[in-house]
Image 1 (cartoon, chains in turn yellow, green):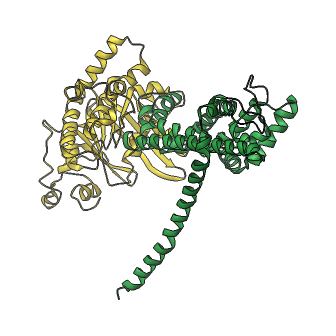
Image 2: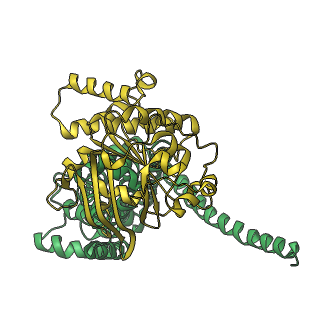
Image 3: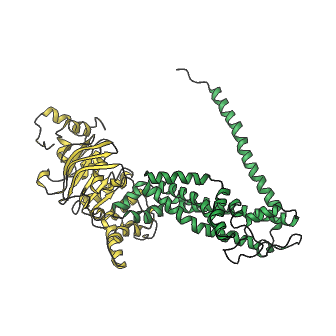
Length: 286
Length: 286
């Protein structure tokens, strides 16, 4: 899986040339993932839904302050994988994870990890927007009130700050008291991102955040991810390969519960090391 | 492949309609008939004194059922205050915490049994439990009997309504670092609140017409309720007594009381209908 060497086979290179729509938007050079400090190190992670195994020996190092895309066909374990990082899978009694997910040197799967503290550090955005049934203001304030004793004045400053960074402030500043459920889908999703970053997490998990919203709203969220990459480590699960190519620095390709290939996005899309990756990104399956 | 004949399908369609429409009409007609009878015979009894005065001795004209109206309101209110919290909490346990555990399965099963238990048996049960022990009939005992009847209704609707709340909403609250109890109370409960209110209203509507359990517990009285610790006048037992009496005036009053209860239940049902409509159109779950 560490195979990163360039191919010299001209015939193969032509075959893996991605569709023209997959424009390589990431500027700069291809970084070597092994040279970067990692935020999360996953070691031999196995996951079970009851008796059915969904992840097999996942090993990956998520680089700090970069956007890592997780791609692969439906049911390959993309979401399952990131749902281990904040232990949200534990809501369901039959779900079970084995192995290690080391966040800043600490295995988050260890029983003595404080879940509330973990989830303060690891934010999550879901496939469908999940505004809470309360006002826009209260949605953003929810996490802040959970984790801090905070004065009213400071609270409204922090709410405004989060909405500004979530690229939603201009659209909602005059209706902070209105129910968040009245916003459009794309606005709701940006609200959820603002809500997640309000408590200053270090790692943000996004589980197909654009799959339920329209292209214009999607573009706004991609712009937002672009800004977030300077401050946060982002893991983005997406079924949209163009999106992965546009916004991510690194890409992991999942297939049938295995991490087949992981490397710089540019390299994965132009010169994948593995046949399955190549078949998937050229649209032969998935 | 030979296309199937259309005549056969048309015939089946006709037959189904011919059978179903009269069935629907019969149901509607019976309801309309009852309403008509109750209104036609009861409306005349509903003067001002009906609501404010005490019943008169047999043979004497005038008077009213003020004590029974007050007693029914008090008993139903007490029953709601006792039955609703237990039902809500147990419903939360089933939907959020117990789910598939053995205890939850047992609770669900016994709740179904309780739901199907004839109300007269609940009445005799409370008679043995409270009336025999205290040595006298009381409004308390009546309220306890009605509370027991309300319990399974509130419990099951609570569970159903909480199950309608999408898991993503729970997950987002937990992913922000909310402890389970707080996520349940501040997000899940709020998302389901109109549905929960509907459950309570339906339970109130269900018990407000019950006669048998009150016959064994609250009994009846010709006087204003002085204390909840003595036999307490109520509309349903009054209807039972008056309708069986040979006095035209009492029978007339029984019709009036019937009309009052019918209108009351109808009002509560319509109220819950509106709450439900509100839930469907405005809040989270689409």
